[in-house]
Image (tube, rainbow, N blue to C red; front, side, top):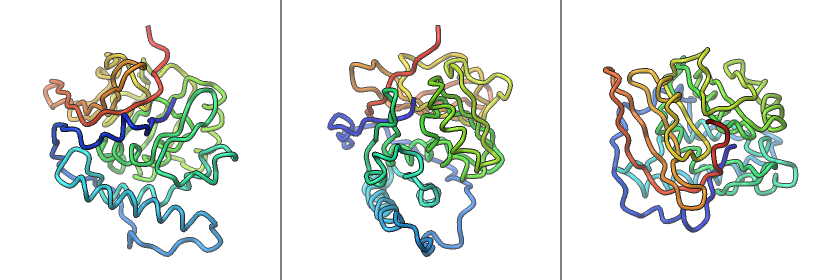
Length: 257
């Protein structure tokens, strides 16, 4: 259920959107150097480095806006082999900055969108994070690299099984098949919730499972029109505010009432 469509509708990134000051910046464990030598024998190392450089340049253009990507998040993406989260037929395209098909009518999100949603979710080591729409497992892997405890749900059973196998390398990830509309009550409340499919409206069960002080990142809108990526924040008194970030195109969230 994961994926954003990077077609022309999305690429109107310069449309005026409300700027959000993201404070504090992510407390993500950083490697000794964000430019560590690439692993020897990795045929995808150069392509992955080029993608990170492209995202870094794109983020500099967005400095001071809600679309700015935290450099620490780029370090996370540099450690996740995206080619292992796409079908074999798409591996040569794995490090292009665009969504790719993963079967069953679903996609793996554009790397820019993964980086942006991770920045907005602001994961921290030890936090509990819920992801709705595991897809191939790529977004969950990026969150896991932040040392957060990730709980991820996928409604398409074959995709859920494939992703669970890929994510076995992360002891801090728990994956299951299910209807993400209703969240994962047994592990609630969550410090952050990342939804990787477009809902017609914000699911009330997810709001209820968000901790005071927590953040939810979710695309909302009709599957037939451009949707809007929202940052939903719940303050310490339980009051909820929602801010628009930018227009996007995601596959629809299925399940629910």
